[in-house]
Amino acid sequence: MKNEIKLILLDLDFTLLNSQRKITPRTLESLKKCQKKGILIGFSTSRGNSNIAEQLKLVEPEVVISSAGGCIYYKNELLHTSIFTLEETKKLFEATYSIFGEGVEVTCDTLDDIFWNRKENKSEQYSPWAKFDDFKNFNQRAMKICIQTTDGEKVKQVAEQISDCDYLPFSDIPWYKLSCKNATKENAIQFLSDYLKISTENMVAFGDDFSDMGMLKMCGIGVAMGNAIPQVKEIADEITESCDEDGIAVWIEKKLL
Image (cartoon, one colour):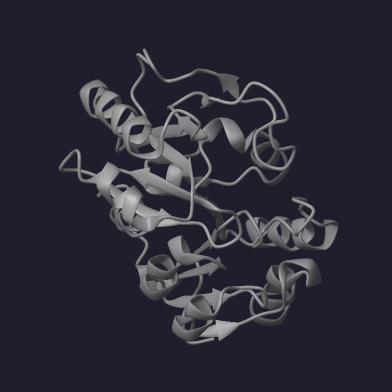
């Protein structure tokens, strides 16, 4: 391999996690072997910190990029955050209800928690433990706000209420996420590259969705999962097996072990 890999960056849903939202024993073993060889393991996910506790305990990654770049951790130390102000958070919620109506479903990741304006029948796969809040008098700063919709034009109208807001759809669920413009996986990776003195050429990234595209293009090797959307496969350097076929382990065993 032309690049000496020093850091492996992993998206979670439908990448490290299979369609049952589990990490398989084979994939976990491959990651642990890499750690024993001195290769750092990193999560790079749109999920908030409170939504990855199980995976953190299992893998024990040295690097964590959460909230799609909003939080950056190294060995459990919080290095950097990109977060909306209280005023910006309030404006985004007000605009969401005004544009989508009172019945819209919304979630919000803060630094420590996840909130949902739905009291019952919360998704067992996403955040069954999310705390309830109707976001009418929310008094915490948002890391990320998600709106259940496929109407990108309306989401754009919400995002335009403040100057520092970006938005992206999820390909697997009918939701959009709103986050600070500088809260991207790419910016987080550059921050870590500078902090750890590891060139992005010495990183490999795995992903499947829109928010992974910049990450895959930025790293020395970008690997698309077999189940990735076509846009991700088009820009990837390599394509491995799907998340249900131990795609990460297959690539690691072949290239690093």
